[in-house]
Image 1 (cartoon, rainbow, N blue to C red):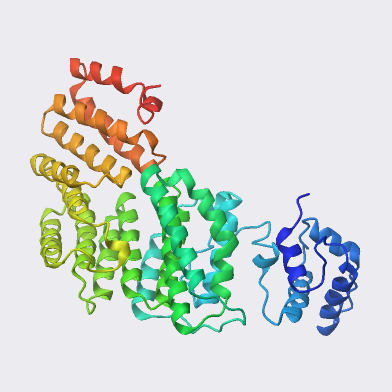
Image 2 (image 1 turned 180 degrees about the vertical axis):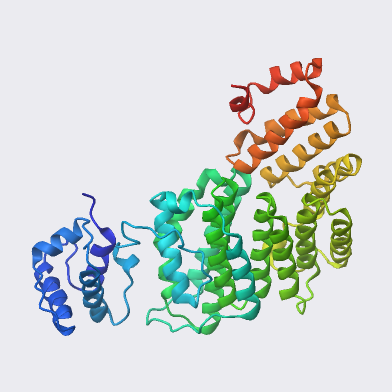
Length: 461
């Protein structure tokens, strides 16, 4: 049985054990017994029990687990939570973990600890869960009306260096996500969050540092959501998005919170929930009306347009795109938060291309996709893949198979390093369009060249 290193480390911190984990087992057994007696129960624990717990056994009854937490907490002078001692969510994982909007930072820490543990354990109830459309509505409404409770901080300090470490870690994982897709380093990110994030959320800090660590925690939790969404774990992604939204709310960062609703809208559109997607984007706009940040407004309206385009609402989509374009024209490079700076001319053009493709406007879609690729910086491999594939789709829609298959080959080559279910969806849409030209010589040549490319090969087989 694997040892419980979290429990061992906390017992050492509390002064119950030496570094070898041997001396002090009887001392801790007495402390757990005393915790039971303090609650009026006649329970006796020995060093043998402690040895079992250190070896990885988790007490089955809730009372014993509570006595252990009380004994450690009394020595440390703070509340100790189950996830801190390796008890996690236990053998039975609730399928509702992470769906509820958190009621304060302690709730966020507990929900994230349980969610991250279930993710690492690959619990089918969580990893394979479907999305809950009502949870999107509940989360957006809770944010708009601000239902969170104030935070009571534990006596353990963190500072600006902890915030910087968290933000730099996010930047590193973000770079990997953009270059290689969510399937590349997502698990490593989850391991990092599991080990560090709940501790940071429960630590004390000055008011300024507290807000910064909550915002940084929201950003990196949102990245876990995007990575999970990118590989097709949609219920899991939704839960991370909801928890990220709660953290941004606790940080009083309305721009960041709205951007998380914006990301939820993106996922909802992908899943065919167009009404919910449009409403999430509108909530993001509504909740940030007073901020007057044009680049954010532009993105929120673009997300609304994406949903309306997929729903076939051309008039609504055009209106949203017009508002987005006007807002984008008002912004100056560098305006707005650092995390929105990726939304440049290339990204805006790519969004226009998607909307026009989905509305069946092949010529306009090709024009915008070509602009997106011409303006691309080359830093975002997955985005470049998407834009190139949209160009191929549009060329095929326009009845230009020769151009379409050449562009598709370029896209498949760009996608060689990607581990992304979303990328595979674009390939599936390509196959649907290619079927129109069945029997054409150009398809035979394409299939011959595409056979060696990873994103195409599984389908060819």
